[in-house]
Length: 542
Ligand code: FE
Ligand code: CA
Image 1 (cartoon, helix red, strand yellow):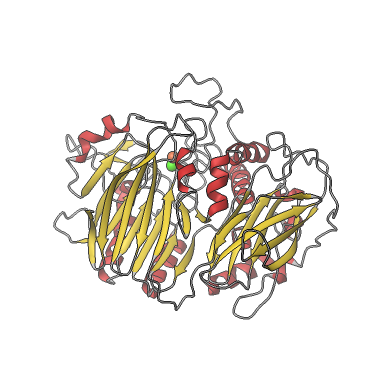
Image 2 (spheres, rainbow, N blue to C red):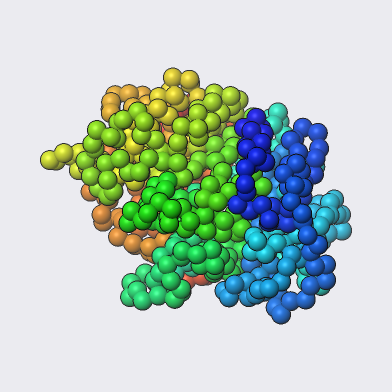
């Protein structure tokens, strides 16, 4: 984590009126000061925690949304749950105040060796969600955790801390995924992922979809939700709860720590910064964005650093796995220039190459570039949302590109790619979601110059579900692939995830595809496997 910036952020927060001031102290945050980590207690203790109910009773199981862990550090991990006995009807705790939640961390799954316990508070201001920022754990260790409220006990989750920063690591196994539209498929891919042996899961956006499908007659719909387009905080909470009720998604959360970022559909399709597709007045859209961001925070295992402040939420952050891998996790939605040449499939315009046009915002871009410079890791992962490699759609009568991806922001892309090249960043690996298709791409130092060297590798993961089986992307995009010789593999038909097995010498990626998203019990297979050798950018078939 970038602690200097974190300190400045805390100082800023302490000095301005806080959107969530009333809830901050009661948000289930355990403000523990300890050597080597800046204390968070200064602003958390500035607000009264209230006195949470210690002996609540519930009309139904309050842990129906499961448990999760995330954002692993060498000495800690975030533990999450949300009390919601009636998840689809406001949570079922209307009118109830803060509720005390006990948590336990153990070295074994039967909790015979408990290593830490504590009390958190589930506050109504944050939907009775609980985020425990557990600290003082051992690096590179497996732990088990659970929560208790009243006489109720949660399911048990398993998690794992990151290795010590200076540790020499021989192996890292993780999976990455994106795009889990509930209505167009079962989470069969997660059912299988939960059985893997992984250190973590990286989620790259579209955790929920905001739109209404209640009336849709699309044959892709396999389960129907009749709720309207999400706009209010209650709408977004209900949508997250609907998704979280799925047992296979819960299983994948309970099995591994997740590092999650968002894309557009957590708020609204293809939004850019403070603009939505319909050019809704900015104040109105930012109020909606605040609702969406808060619900996202409430339902993901995120640190207090990511607590939203009105329509702003810091989600870009960094994770180090010893000397083997460093993850730079980006947010390419919140700070980007509104589509400089318009939305959809269009030719480039002058604004696309204006130096002021940005995908990350200048602050995040500087954070990324300086973080890459400071990294000592063998593999430098950039986890982000939208296709980074060029995808030329058509050459005649003029070159056409998809404007919501990095192709709409070519100058911003070139600043990053040329930095990776000129600084000799070790093994750049860009991991991408959004496209509901699989790509394996060579990243060139400059896509405007076909002879420029390959300096990195991009894996684009297909959707967990979105669009269902054979969603039409194969037929649409296949004819374009030949125009883009840097694309080593494309598949538009199948849904699944990518599992990575990383050692100092080799990065292996197994592309896992389910037989169908229409059957919860469907099988899974390895569609293709690629390897990247240390020091040799570009993936090769395994
Ligand atoms: Fe998506
Ligand atoms: Ca998307």
